[in-house]
Image (tube, rainbow, N blue to C red; front, side, top):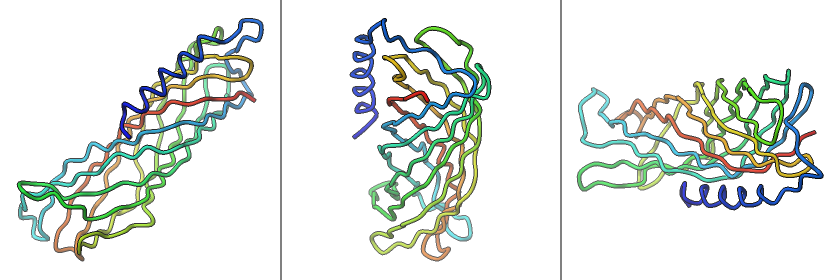
Length: 216
């Protein structure tokens, strides 16, 4: 599964949006409302950092971290008609590879719990289209690691920053289509084989989602 899968899902949901009936029109959320959104999310790291020895010497290898597509949940509370706070919950599993020259080997697989909290600004308070921009913080918590091919890998948990852009598109009644893109900036130290090798890894994933929301 790739970003193409998420794009096809978005096209299908956009077609659904076109069938919404005016007699039960959706209205943009207002102060005090909750918007709960179930999404299909692609977390796509942009890692390409060097693997070096304990002394810092080059090995000719780089770190590659694979994409992961998983379901996620978003919980948005509207402080005012224009400002909202969103928390994203979900977990993804990623394959980590060492690549370079003739080498392309899996060294580790890990689950990641990457909660993100953002403050959103929504300029429109009427109509079926509610775009937003946001910024906030995220955490990266690695768990359930599985070493591969004789390697041992340790990844440091930590915190980073996030920016987002997206929109809710009214369907019918309390239901809406959600499209959301986040950019997360996060750095972790990877220790390989007890410190014999190491890498300063900028994961910096794109987080692309499509889903259905319900207003409460």
